[in-house]
Amino acid sequence: MSHPQDWTLRQQSEALRHGELNARELLDMTIARINERDSTINSTPVVFNKESYDQLNQAPAGPLHGVPITVKDMFALPWRAARNGTTADLIPAGASGPYRNLRDAGAVVVGIANQHELGIGTTGTQSGYGRMGNPWNPERCAGGSSGGSASAVSARLVAGSLASDSGGSTRLPAAYCGVVGLKLTYGSVPYDGYFGAATTFSAPGIITRDGSDARMLAAALLQRPLPAQSGSGLRVGLIRDPFWDDVDPEVAAAGEMALRATGWHVSEVQVKHLELAGAAFLSRLIAEAGMPTNELLATLSVPTRALLLAGMLAPARFIPRADRVRGAIRDSLAKSFHTVDFLCWPTSPAPAPPLDDPHVVIPSGRAQADLPNVRQTRLANLTGTPAISIPVGLHSSKLPMGLHFIGPWGGEARLIDAAEHLERVTDREFVNLTPPIAR
Amino acid sequence: MSEFEVWATATFRQSKIDVNPSDLSLIELIYTAAIRQLEALDRIDLEKFPAVGLDLRHAPKPS
Image 1 (tube, helix red, strand yellow):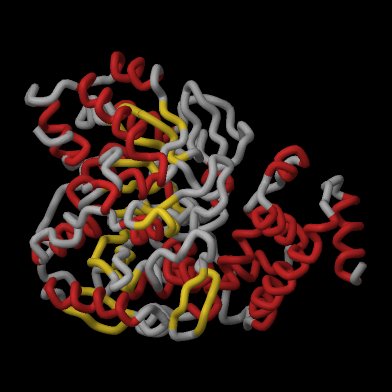
Image 2 (image 1 turned 135 degrees about the horizontal axis):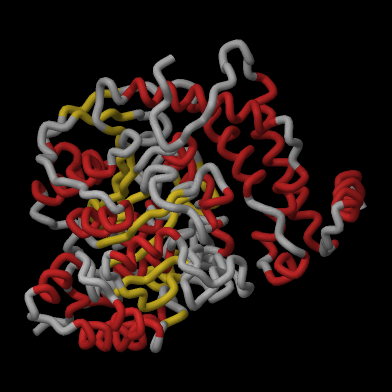
């Protein structure tokens, strides 16, 4: 028998339900695999050797009964405070809203997923637990901020992880690690006990290996069915500049090849005022980053601390203007969904950069990876819409690449239909790619 | 100390925020770059960007 963490989340769930797999043995094997495999990628720095068994003993007979998952450090758990990638307890222990939904579906939290410090970064190079490595090459970034979630799923430590997304933090690490990352519609689950509660950008997200698993985990999190429909015949909108034009040519080519395989109707669309999206996003982001205590500031890495402090100095006059721009962009995006089912472009503009030098080279020049990364993903956070990243193959650097779909509010099921269609027409070639650490 | 560093130090002191002097040059770099980007918002025509409620959970009501 192969190791059950080499199976998908749905396969684990079905095997448990049919008595072909014992939940306690699955948990034993999952913890053993994390201990054996995580040292080079540091995806799961905290393992619940006792609490996970306690949860299993009390797990209800839901669709995820006995399935081990990890949870990003942004969500409070009944036995552990949320630290948000720092060394300090920032939200007291308690059952956060997203945790409750997954618990009620029967999932078992086996560990904490590492993340970029305070969620302010897309590389995973800063964390109170130490930086995260990419399963495809541990010297490369796992991404951020939900880097530990994506690297654990990619490395087959767990089949699913609860992540979050304030500017691409679920989708970007999913693209870097070759897995599926789904950002939910803003406010679609209870936000208590979750850092996103203090922002207008953040939404919980999930990381899985394929679309079918995303459907299962997202349905549990949203507590509503996400019925599958045919993903053929969908209408896709492209915005070339900058989302397709200013990316690594191999990344654009992989995305275009995947799109051609789908047979979808592709057209170019326009969303107005995108030239102001960066300013509108930045204005709110730095205002919402929070007011840390001096004790916390002293523990943070220099880049994170400097970002927070610089943000505190920014004048408030920009915020109402940013919100007006945001309203106009939302209006224009909503109109675009009258003619297309979703928008599409590459998730990250280049594959994962080195941990020691997190810069990328794209047609517009060499840049710190965060800037072009967030440019590709922030539209969904500005507008509150759901979005998904799905793998579309390997770059010549032997690192994964991702394609990104943004759908209308509440349209998670359609995005997953699209992901599953792409998997089907490519014979699961991309979702079945396995990183060296998991072979 | 630069003019920025004097101002930033005084502002943080007023807010009772401890700042490591060695962080100030990086703070200035980030702040300057951020303000340069944010100033695009000063130039928008408010007539073309009306204030609207932002219910991020749902699509905006048709305008």
